[in-house]
Length: 365
Image 1 (cartoon, helix red, strand yellow):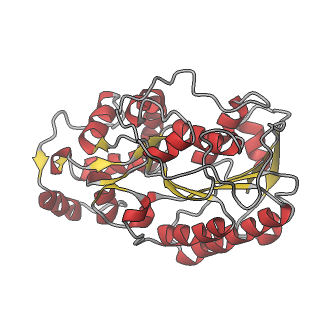
Image 2 (tube, rainbow, N blue to C red):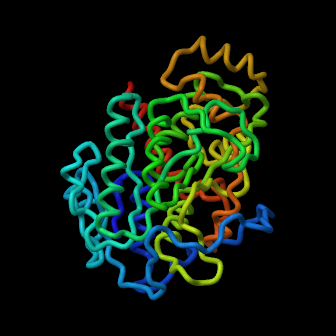
């Protein structure tokens, strides 16, 4: 198995989950996972048990992971305990030569690397051309299963409420989301799976909660009454889904069709009010006001414009207004428990968030 982006936020969580899996076994739920209380029980998943371009054998193979990173030596030395099942390889999507031979002998590719910056040219180089070159290598090496991390940000500004994949055309508005949408095409052409999660929360998240902290400082209020519903997922539960898709054999009852595009957030959306209240309850936001007045969306935007910062109006809307997409079927078809929900998981990552936000404040002081 090859895992790209293995030192990133999501990639490192996937790698840790893979290493939790006993050799030769199917992935199991987290020990602390309770059955979901969302009450969402899809009755007729769209997916059927059909293979991708190459059908892997149904008998489990010994797990061997080739973790790919631009800085593998640092990662293997500091972030992961040495494991005989794990090797590190240098691979840079901006350098196609570094990808040659990466997938030799592998039967699964988990592609979790991307550029999420603002430089259109570099995003094109990494996300589009780099992914195409990587998929070419995987196909040439006979990899039978490709699972690729994309993003629900490809749908653009919204608001969006309870939509399936085939109910909304993508309308990306940033360099990262435009090129990540384009990067899906070679994966789909090779018969792979594309997962589009919404907001991903947990230790290592340097975008969602830090952006919320900035916005709370610029607009100290309950934004539009906190009514916005958001697709979100805890990083450890998303990692479990990737591992389930990687390791579940074909040819068994209920097996996921590994081809196509699927939303990959927790089935139950969270409200912005509940998300903010949970973070406040865990004392994540430094210097948060004791009470938050309700503000209309128009007043929120006026306050945002009056106080400049890094987070844009578009990103504010993404975090505060309806952006949720139906995600039940991928968890059901993969027979993967989505966990108790991202808000319940925040207790485990609150210490990390507090330390990270304090460090950011000290850096800017």
